[in-house]
Image (cartoon, rainbow, N blue to C red; front, side, top):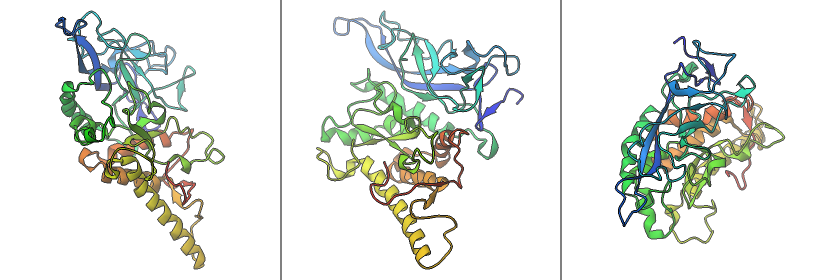
Length: 364
């Protein structure tokens, strides 16, 4: 317990901590045998794990239990494990490494040590680095939380991914993070039914990663802000960064129903999410308008500020549960990831914070 230091209610990663980024998948490496059919070896995806106890190049003037603290872009875990079998000469398909370093891609926006941002529980990592980029998609670092959320928020979800994702080893597109979602309409159902894809729905990604082949959404998907970005106009929330805000990967580039596309309406989870979230937002606006028209107390709400952050977050979680019900994502895991960004001191949101609302063109 003495090793636990928290930033934004999440434990800071340090050499003395027990945290880990477990089973980042897929770390695709060329694997023997080398044959005429596969001269560089067979590309096989491996689950990769990095440990906080391998922290390197951390803080020097500030320590936890006498050991260094991990810092943004400077520190790393000196090794990762799980891909040792990928020992053909080329090794990692991107980095040409195995057992490479682990770097963080997200961090606290407002807690710094020695002038650098600290990294925490649920911040994202990439594995098997030689340099940049890494050889794996982004994957959460798991440690502990404090306050009323002191739980291993996503432990079950991470176990589900570890169990389900070895099935992806038979994927023809093993050298990619995922297959082309909409290469044809007929393939979509098979993609949606893939147990690995379903399990990974629970892991939210920053919007900036949406087109990152090795760490964001798949081809044919779009990163959808699970708390819509239009709730946070710059004039009211100057420190909100839509690129860093958490998103779920959804099918369909556009959220419009009338766009030209070669797949069924039911396949387009992007507009499905909008339908549910927009309806809730319109209902909130209508309730405020009706209350005001009747001379009632709107409790500080107006048509353009008809919701609170906590309500918008819960609305996004509920929509996720309905659209991706077969992914078995716990509300607590999703909520923890959403709060990890929005409750940072620099963003400044609390459950009771009023946010911007609009009835037309709603969620984005």
